Amino acid sequence: MKYENEFVGPNIPRMGNALTRWIGDIIIKSIGWKLEGRLADEKQIVLIGGPHTSNWDLILAMGTALSVGLKFSWMMKKEAFFWPLGPLWKALGGIPIDRKAQLDVVGQMKGYLAQNEKVWIGITPDGTRAKVDRYKTGYLRIASGTNTPLFIVGIDAKRKTVVLDGLYDLTGDIEADNAAIKTYIETKYNGINPEKT
Image (cartoon, rainbow, N blue to C red):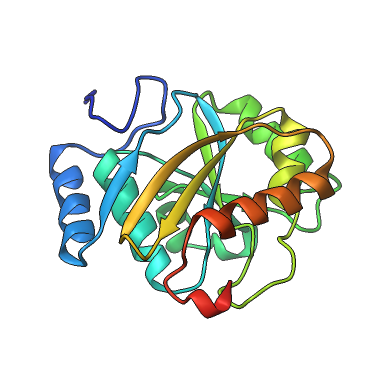
């Protein structure tokens, strides 16, 4: 079923229907949050969210995805895709990553993106809910190595708002981009547990 709403365009990978969008709205509103912004109308995106400081971030991410009807994918070690959970993980957007393969993660993602027309890969660049001095650079290596645009989603706990921020222009200098993105997110947004940013 195709549908339009204020947050998404026609090229974005979709999932669900009116019922699942309603469930997503209920999740977001029941905890007193709201959505703001619009997703980029791109078929393939590396999607990062932050600051990641609480377990509630997962609830917000799932509620947001359901609410706007976005099917986003995430990477997980292939060993977790055993029966009967393997088919469920894949249906929910899981991408099995073989850490022992000849191809590194970027190479595996190149293959995955080449085989799938519409894919949004969700990554938390801090990699943990704890305070970090720098983000992990895997998200940038994937975006740069696959020539995929980078989109930022901000958690603004002060306003209780999930902000669908926008595309971020990369320079190609991974260390400089990584530091600039961390500063951008931490300056503009407020995590649920601000002491961890």
